[in-house]
Image (cartoon, rainbow, N blue to C red; front, side, top):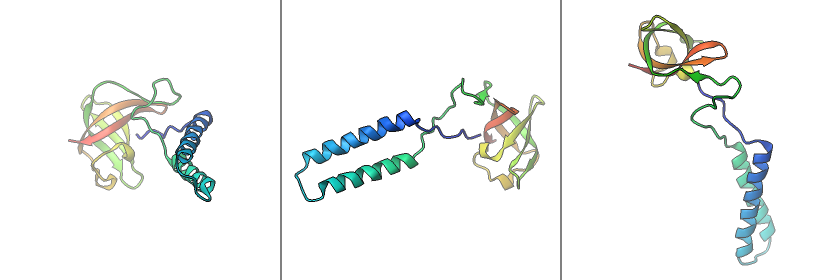
Length: 141
């Protein structure tokens, strides 16, 4: 399952925007003076900040202590699809150990959700989510 993107806090954004403003100020204070230099500097600052504001910062793993953050339980497992609804994009994998685990199409890589069929083999990690065990990083075998 894909983790939600981590965004900068208000204080973090203030610090980053202040550093951008300072950088733009320094750059434009070193250049020769020209008409409307302040307008170009302001537009440059606005452009950089708007690009930064639309960017997201997503770490590759979730923090272990955060609320609702799933925790992976050890090694990769293997199993086969018990059933999968290609329209809704979810189903269950029965592991070789007999345990059933929920799987969502966002966790499946290299396979289209409409092409997942019963008895198809996958390897996966089991993650303890707030709704129970769930398959993560699901890859076809």
